[in-house]
Length: 210
Image (cartoon, rainbow, N blue to C red; front, side, top):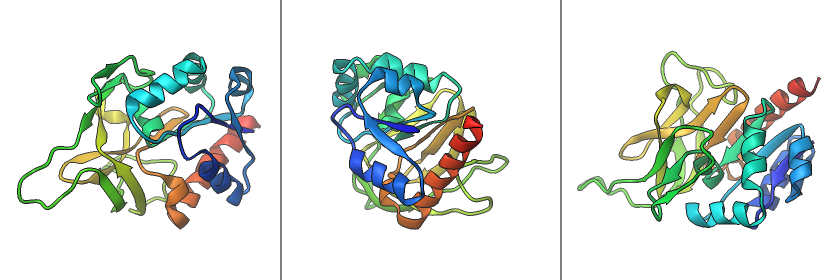
C-alpha cells in the first residue's frame, strides 16, 4: 500500500486518482502508524513552504515522514513536498525543513530581458544530466511535465540531481538518492508523462515489497 500523507495541503485526491489510474493502491492518511507501516510514502504539497511545514508539524507528522524517507522504503515528494525534503527555504526565511537532502530552496531570479515570469507555470521539458540515469524516466527521453512554483532547490550535493529543467536558470526537476525521489513538477497534472513516472515509481514499490 502507498500512503499519501494528508496534512491538509496538497493535491491529495488528484494524486490518489493518478496512482489509481496506473493500477496502484494509494491511501490518504494522517496516521503516523499507517505511514510507518506503508510499503511506500508520497508527500505532496501546494502553497507556501512554511505553511506546509507547519501543517506537518501540527499533525505531528514531520518526524514520521522524515523517518519514512530514511527507512529505505520507496518515497516520493511532489512540488512543495519536494522542497520540504531540504533543510530550509528563502520563502519566509524558514529553517527546520526535513533535511533529507542537504541544501535550501531559493527564489527564481527575474533576469532582465528574458520575458520570464515568476511563478514558473506551465509545461516545460525535463532532461537527465549527461552521465546520469533516473529510474523514474524513460532512457534517452526528455519529456514535458507541468510546473507551478516560484522557488527551486539548490542542493549541496549536485549528485542527487537526477533530472533538470531550464527557466532562466538550470534547476533540479527530480532529485533522488537510494529509494527516495522527489519531483518539483506535478506528475498528477502531467498527463501521459506523469502517469508513466508514477507507474515507474509503483514498479519500484512492488519490487521492494517482494
